[in-house]
Amino acid sequence: MNPQGGKAYGALKVQQEELLDSLNKEFLESPKYSTDEDLAEKLELFKKKYMEFDLNAQGDIDIMALKRMLEKLGAAKTHLELKKMITEITGGMRETINYRDFVSMMLGKRSAILKIILMYEKMKEKEELPTGPAPKRTVADLP
Image (cartoon, rainbow, N blue to C red; front, side, top):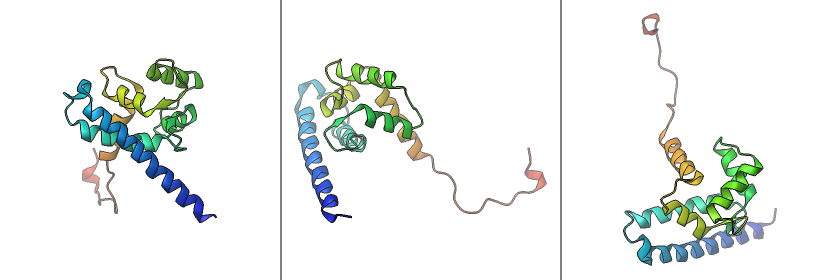
């Protein structure tokens, strides 16, 4: 295994995070979004999720990254459905979702699939299963 690959990937992720931070600053300074509550916190969450979805760190979420993300969440979609989602988000201008598209969609008034995904992920995080041995039960405990 080449240790340079890990360092190069780490450097690429740092570079990507710096770019997304600069784009977040544009949203924070935009009068269009000045009334949004908790905008800084939302943008930080969007940045983390975008970096997670941008699996190849190329700066865009492509159809395969979107497919893997939805499969991971148990919401597999057909190729046609994925293309339709990307078209809805980008307005048909591109075949990949860039960060500006992603944030605009997340802050927009329209409900879109990625908003729903983030909502489910948040719900999934809160749901912790009990650990350790099961509690002892008797016949009286049966319904």
